Length: 282
Image 1: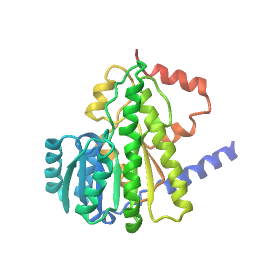
Image 2: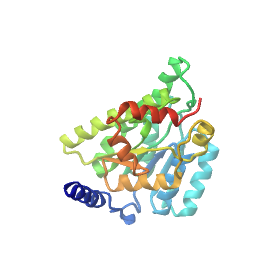
Image 3: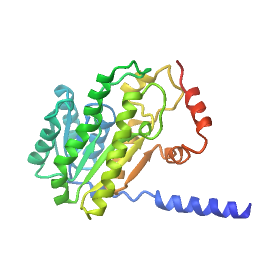
Image 4: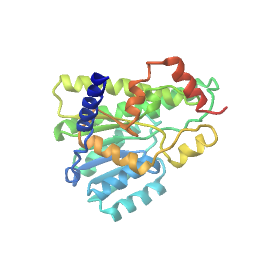
């Protein structure tokens, strides 16, 4: 019993040390930032936090009118510069075009936050393979394209790529087959890229942020009446993502306890699956 208590105490102290908040707001001031999927939800909140921190921002999404509103608010909140570029990430040419626009207009790039996602139903998979294919382009392949285009510039600046992923790329649940597939792909590809950048002594840091259920309007509309899971604030999630990228964390979790969700994921698979299935209604 004493040994167990000592181990728990040591583990608690170690984790408190490793998870301490070392974020310096001044480290973001004046930095050149590209945020995708920034018209609503988490991406919009990321843009506003960067604005408050005095960054230079380019935001992108499909809807020009909404982006204009976001840029206007960013300037009001204190952004050193705020610009937008419309883009449709389902088009093969748009991901690289967005990176070029940001680099040309900001004179370089320090942070690239990849956050955009395509539309997907919260329902049993209906056998539609074409939807999986198109969603993979938006949620995964465009991330790869943008990273490929941005890496040379980020190498020069010692910049960072921040990939917004999901607990659903670590743990399977009902109703999210196509979406979950794209997030597993993100975690696999960018986890591999982290190794390769390290082996090459690259100046680029790469952060993967694993998010639980967040209370964005689109997410709440989909899950309403179908799950008992608790949703957490988009603004808090956005600030967590910025801090994780600025402090060069390889992997971050919001809410924090999902680190343990992933840690214990495979310990009791039968019990795990029962809990997951009981958390949803059908």
